[in-house]
Length: 149
Image 1 (tube, rainbow, N blue to C red):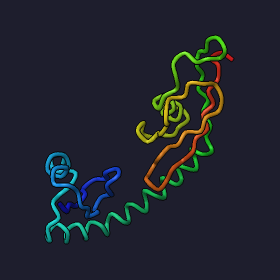
Image 2: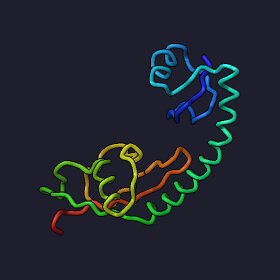
Image 3: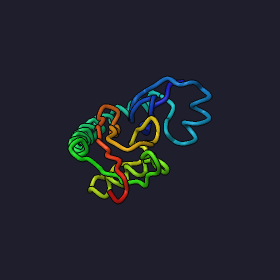
């Protein structure tokens, strides 16, 4: 089924894209959540007009995301945790901890844009990716240190 995206859908496309998806996926998930509309001639013409407007908006978003990426790359966050024997952390450092540390530094990012393969469970320096847009990814250095040290 050909559909037109009304929202950015990860691994599918961006607003205004005409994509082919399975009938069940469209009927049971995308259409009820109002993420897409069926691709008819009228809808395609309407979307073409909106796409021109969106291109301007996307370029402005990309520019601001690149600026934010530079700020994030220049920022290093220190997160202190309690440690036990052999410097093993009690618990771990999660995406929420990193989001909170960035917020304390004056940088607002969504929790879901912080990508880690697994939570950080060791002291030291760790690189964390922050995906601001599909084509703009920032790298953040996270220092995990002993609490009270």
